[in-house]
Structure formats: C-alpha cells, structure tokens
Length: 407
Image 1: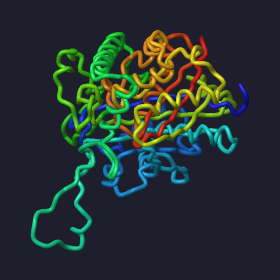
Image 2 (image 1 turned 180 degrees about the horizontal axis):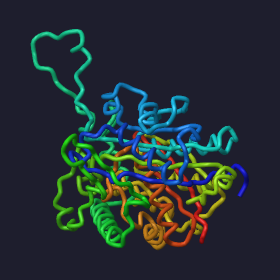
Image 3 (image 1 turned 135 degrees about the horizontal axis):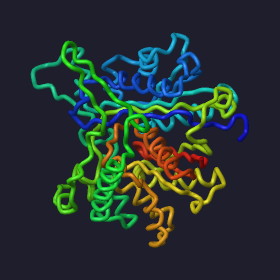
C-alpha cells in the first residue's frame, strides 16, 4: 500500500424501514446522526478527528422540513464539534456513494486523512407540496397538492419506471426476466438472513426510538423483505406509471434508513492501530443520455474497471443497486457483450445476498449501503475484489472497486 491509499475502517447502516413503517416519523437527519455516532464509536475515533463529512440526500422536500444544511445538522447532532466541516450533496440515488468518493479523492490528493461518507433518507416523511402561488393568495377554486413521490419522475422527463422498462426491452430483458430476478432477490435475502449475515454489530446497528414515558421502539432488522414472495404473485401484479415491464414487485419500496462509511489514509489507519475492512482501489462518477438509467450501472462498471486496469474475470463479487430488477440484468447483458454463458456467470456473483428489492432503497443511503454490504461479504469469503455500481435519476452513475485482503 502507498501512504495515501484509502482504506475503509468502519461501515454501518441502520435497518431499513418500509414506507409508513417503524421509522416513518424519524427525521432522516436524526438517522444520519445515529450512523455517524455508531461508525465512529465502533473504532473509537473521536468526532474532532474527522476532517470532512460528505452527506448524501436525494429527497430535498423531506430534509426541507428541518429547513436546510442537513449535513451540518446531522454532524452536530452526532456530537461532532462546531469546527467540523461538512457538505450536503444530492446526486439522486448515487448520493452516498458520491459522498464516499469525494472523501476518497480528498484523501488521495493528500489534503486530509480522515473523512466520512454518509447518506440518509426517510421517504415516508416526504411532504406534499403546496403550489407557490398560494403564498401570494389565490382566487376561488381548489388547491392541488403535488406529491413528488408519485410517478417517480422529473418534470419534463418520463417516469423512471417508463425509461427503465423501455430500455430493458431494448436489451432483450422481459417482464418475466425481471420478475424472476425480483423473486431471486427476496429468496437470496431470506437465505442470507437465516445464515446470520444481516446482524447487529456487523453491517447493521440497533435503532432505538425514544417514546417519552413509554418504552422505546426498537428496530433491529430490515422491514421490507418479503420471504413469502412467489413468482405467481409477482406475475399477477399490475404495471405501474405506464411502464412496459415495471411493477411494485420487481421494484424496491419507498424506504427509510441511513448508511455511513469511515475512510482514512492507510498511513493514518496504521498510526491508529486500526485494521482496515477494505482498501478502495478506484471510484468513478458517470452520466449518460437521461433515458438510459437502466444501462448506466453497466457502463459505469466498464469504466471503473478500465480506470483500475482490472479485468471482469478478476472480480469476485458485484453489487448493482436494484433501483428496479432491470438494472442488474441490463448491466450483466452489457458486461457480457450478449454472451448468454458469460451473462449467467456475471449474475451468479451479483447481489449474492439479495438487493434493494428485498432490503429496501432509501435513495440517499443506498450507494453507501451496497458498498458496505459487498465489503462485509468479501470479508466472510476470506477476501477478494468487488465492484459496486448504482444508478441515479436521469442516468447518473457511481462506481467503486474495493479489495479485501485475506486473514
């Protein structure tokens, strides 16, 4: 390792809550503060040692309920000193992986030695928006509220489910293919859960929600998984928002949670006597034609592998965020150049413990989540190299390669 190699020394997430579930009333800023405290406490790093915190969110309406600067609010609530430097960033679902990447770049540049990459979201708290003319008064007639979650799109563009479904079909990925992948995601998660892979103290932390004089509410596992899913049930679900392939079953929920990754220069970690969880080999940001959101993770993996000079055959694990089931399937089609046997081999090492369709997708937290999930699985396997990629609204992408050394 070189002195400014970047290593992950601590990584954690909350259990992810379902839409309207246990965490529905908890501000995402509070969840962000929870994971910041936990990720530092696990390795006994003091808040004042963190030189920069990068904090990802993707639903500005929810953090807007607390006005603004969620990164600043979360770090202060977590107990970091007033001198702490932080920045909030919104790169849609890419946000928390982008947060890690910005810290990675600052460390590689030699400007700092310790950084936090954080992401948090509570989609259940997303407010309905009153049109701006109401502030200045309106004439007779009803006022229509706007729901930013409905349709999952951007003004002037297609709903993402429409673009995803159309692009999936263009790559030869059918509705049935997507339902099968969704079913597999649920089954892989159920198996991993039974094997104790999603446990407090490793990937997960315990969330305790005070209730005044009543006992606190405790959340210790993800709420969204559906182990009773069947292909028959999935096949009967209606299409959503005009998509040709996307249903509520082959897509994730509108979820709640937070993730945090603490990174350092290898030199600093050694000075502090900390054993790294992983080394970050390379990170990259991408973007393409807005409608190609289903394809951007595949393009991103190609680019980050090229940047690192690593071949796909050297990769032990792949994580592609399941914004929809189409994303890992289209990615594998791209990476395999259409070779069915190669595509099968790629999919066998993709999202091996299930993905967002089972775990949940609190959008601002998911980029860091797939990265830390992959790191912990590589460690269980005794080491290896993994690549993770996530898409974001209007076809943005983030990618990362990490290496875990054997014991």
